[in-house]
Length: 74
Image 1 (cartoon, rainbow, N blue to C red):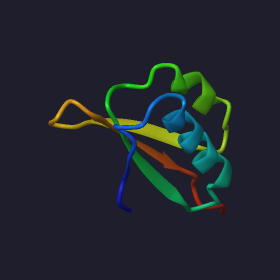
Image 2 (image 1 turned 60 degrees about the horizontal axis):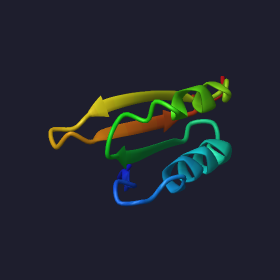
Image 3 (image 1 turned 90 degrees about the vertical axis):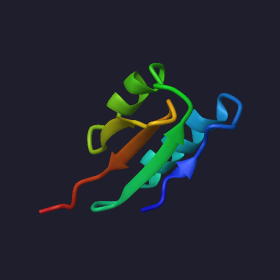
Image 4 (image 1 turned 45 degrees about the vertical axis):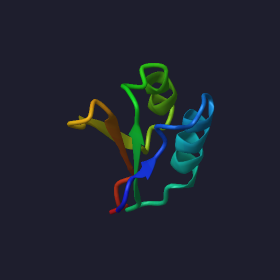
């Protein structure tokens, strides 16, 4: 799953793209996004998606990668 690089986008573009992806994730899907910094304002918005899991990894270049996933249904 290649990450979509959103580092050079002006706000609110990255948040809109991430929330649209969260809306479209189906069971078993994953998505990843590279951001220039930790997106604090995005956290409460992602928390509104009870079926979506997310995590962050800090890159060596100071950026942050956000991973979204929706677990497969049993």
